[in-house]
Length: 198
Image 1: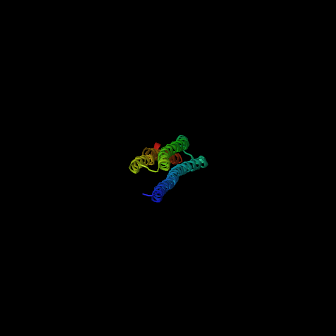
Image 2 (image 1 turned 180 degrees about the horizontal axis):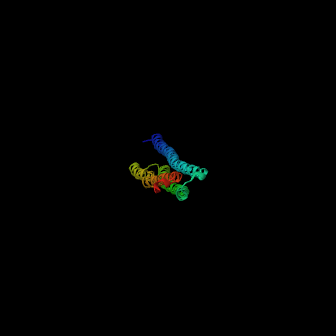
Image 3 (image 1 turned 90 degrees about the vertical axis):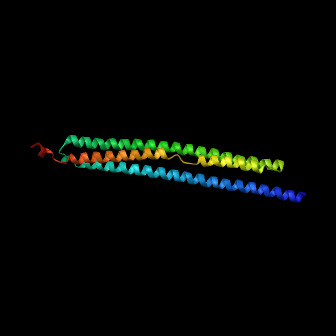
């Protein structure tokens, strides 16, 4: 092989490595951006739903106080309003807890993904540097390392939503149950129950 052919082959390998590295970094940027956007949308949707439930609870509690002159049973009225106020406090606490939990999860996922992507990026840099210094690379070794890093990437970018999604759903269910119970007790407090006493 003459120097021209050797130089052309070397250039071809270098171009392949650079293109492969560039393609990888584009996928990295796109996937991390999409992952972050999806995470934030899911978090926002869940939190917004919780905020809306808390607003409804506040409106129901407010209606009770606007009609306080029509209350027939002060104990039931107090219990109903108490439940509604407690549910608002509980809802605000749970929203904060979910926000913090999701923020920590996004940070953990981001760190895991970044670490895996960084390892792949280092592999490309190391391989290109070796090629430039030694005029050859072990393609099979490179492919094996690349496959190992890709497997780590696949594991790193899988979200861990199952347990949190269940807990968040439970929080919203509890909030709705307290809302319905408090509203029902509040409504009953406006009913004259003395006709049962005979």
